[in-house]
Length: 137
Image (cartoon, rainbow, N blue to C red; front, top):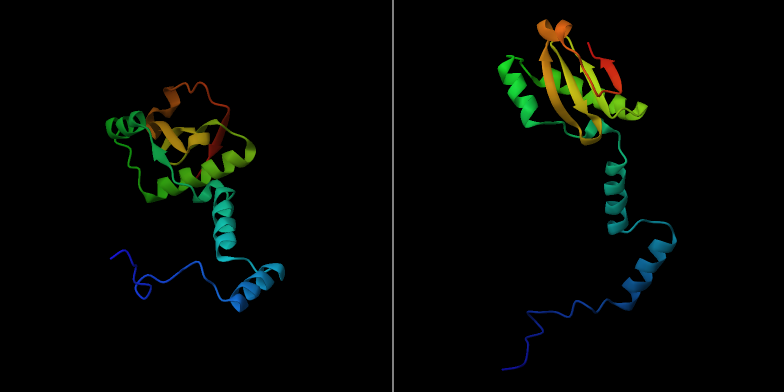
């Protein structure tokens, strides 16, 4: 009863000698292993520009969008996403993004919209604690 059926559970540690040599030769020739390829892909995504990173909304920003009847559609989202990428490239951290619909205070490092002000109310507002501004039309 203590015998394990080797037919059902093959010994996965055994690789034919010719396969070991072939694998070693492939790595020496510069061909990437499957793991190395995946690792390079993941590292490339981490170093990719911010255009590919998702934008989130703080609870405060969500409340402001609702209170001020600001329609945050896909077009606005893409503008914010593009703006964050440009601001990161220039070293922005806490930035004001102005679009045709509204102004958004954005935490660039966290890809997060902190608050929003509708276009009609922009003239009377003071924006503090920002280090950069970008106009997105």
